[in-house]
Image (cartoon, rainbow, N blue to C red; front, side, top):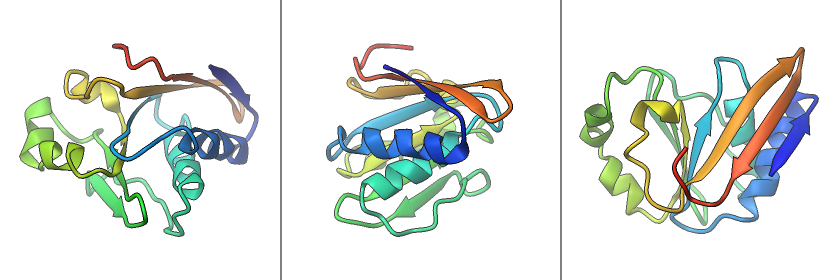
Length: 141
């Protein structure tokens, strides 16, 4: 599915819409350049899950945890050097937690995602316009 977004709020709305299709243990791998809107998308995802937390980019912490009926773990892999670092912070435990995982800069850990991972690619198309492609097939990127 491809969505055209013309604002940050429309990008968040795309995340809210995806939230309705997710269940416990879902993993969402996000791809896109710096400033593409990945965190805005995750902000909408959190809202769609009914979470009241203020969602911010976990660039320096690597993961932010948002509690709720179904928790959301928001990862930013920009600062990791390799996939081993992801496992060093307990990736296996996060996968088994039953929470929803949203992972920015997923290309840094391309081989670490479980089958069924939803892949979201956000492309800048000019100004505040974005093309958001959501692949729910669970295949490889």
